[in-house]
Length: 290
Image (cartoon, rainbow, N blue to C red):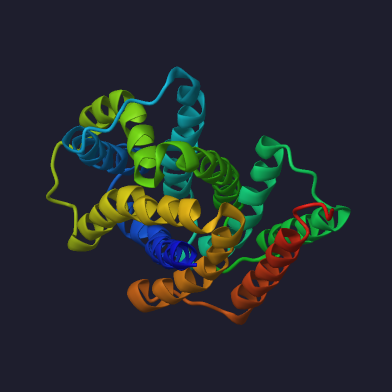
């Protein structure tokens, strides 16, 4: 019971940290190039992760783990940060947070595909309803949105769900913080040289908000958040603790309103609530009854 409770606490801390990712990214890409933000955050977190692995003398993962680690890195180290950074050049963070309502569902779908589970038919009903709700919102919404930004956000959610599912599976074998650290190290040979090559010649134009945004996504979104998140998944169970992601869209909307003074309208809240309902229903029927 104590281990399960610890898992819920760690998972909630991870979700709370991730909730600030999109507002922080929005602030960072205000003055930085999106590709530089992606490479810089991964490089900073990767160097810290490498230091942790060396200082704590962690054993290297086996060859059988390289493939899943590469999928994890492609999803949460490269794919999601890059796609969201590009999307936030076209949409507000409040608008983008609505799409995060599909992240738990996407993670569950990849868990089904990769884990070989057989969900009940009702699972797919809730899945399609949630997807249709978000797609409908993206199609009719004009406040803070654009077709290009919406497509980028949908792609970001898909690759992030894949990265979450792969990382969660590996966390049971390698350990929570070790998974994200090794994934960051695996991407470091590409991300660090790229960051140095495309680094701005001058930082005079970069404001305080952009620096704070870059610092947050580098330290918290890219590393510290995953330490708590994967530890929570390993301790409390992937299916159970994964449901805490349902709180993330609401936290993100609150932060977008408080920190960036972005408008959060009733349509955003309604669509987010509807997506959360669909995700909760799909998770309930994700495993076929015995």
